Amino acid sequence: MKPALEFLGFASVATLVHLAVFAATQPDGMSAGGTGGAQDITQAGAALASADAAIAALVARWETPPSV
Image (tube, rainbow, N blue to C red):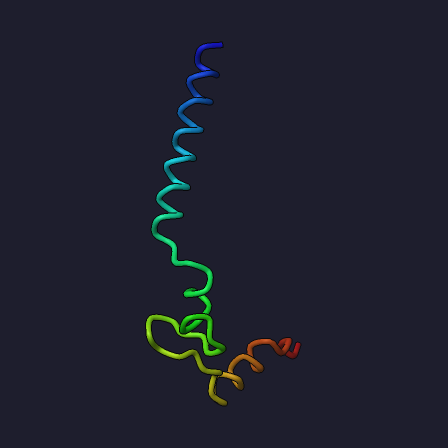
């Protein structure tokens, strides 16, 4: 019985510590949604863009089944 209680106690303390660190390091929801919640999404200051035609053709070729 004692090992089960020890495990439960340490597991709950570890969970709380992990949640506290996660909550302290993650940005708020509004600031994480682009530039102050604006419509443009940025990642580390660089705007995300769609793939160019060469990447789209590569994906299309990858997704086509092989001819047997």
